[in-house]
Image (cartoon, rainbow, N blue to C red; front, side, top):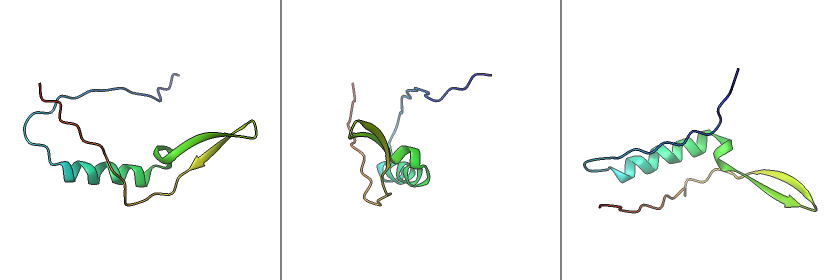
Length: 67
């Protein structure tokens, strides 16, 4: 049995995007899944897993790529 942990997808969206709804959806995902708030640091030669607390100040950078 084989497991896949990283899936890379791209979608082309057409029409108007409700940025507020998108932000709320991603914020909800980050709040629910600690793995999305996890970082790894090297401390005294050892790797440490740090799970950052959720903050409702989650921000996304939006870039318009019309072309």
